[in-house]
Amino acid sequence: MEIEQLRQELNHLLESINERSNKLTGERNISPLEIDVILSKVNKLQEKLVILRYILNNGGKEKQVFVEEKIADEPVVNKEKIDEPVVNEEGQLHSVADKLEKTTITKLADAFNLNDRYLYANELFNKDMNAFNNLITTVDNASSLSDAKELVMQAKQTYNWDEEGERVQEIFGLVERKFA
Image (cartoon, rainbow, N blue to C red; front, side, top):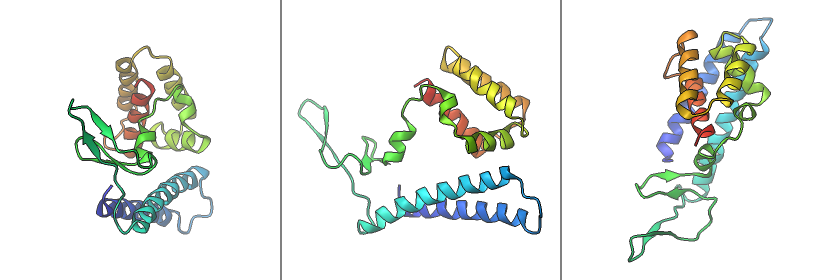
């Protein structure tokens, strides 16, 4: 992840947190769901700042693990620390977080903590926790990725989700990880 891209993501998160906070100004009763949304964004901000600190502590450059080529054209990874960012064959930089985002999920329901459940139910299902839980259970029981995606697409149409929305993209990503 380049420093400039990381800074843009940090600015976007800060703007989003500020926007949510401004909506709460002057309100006496603040919904726990609104607080959960802000906490989720603050957690993402913290993760991005940890990555930025790591990069800056390494002289402003991400340490890279380069791929060497054997005579037989089989790539061999230089055995430096695996936990550090890695450059793949296409020259793209990946971090441990990227690797974790690609790990398979055994049970989709386990991918959501309590705060996430409220957040998704609030933003995608018009605060209907039962609808959220029903979709997750149904997707967990789906027999294939295409069936699972079809179920999510039906929910997308039913609840009129913005396809570019952060939660919508996340839920599709989690479904893909479930069937990876």
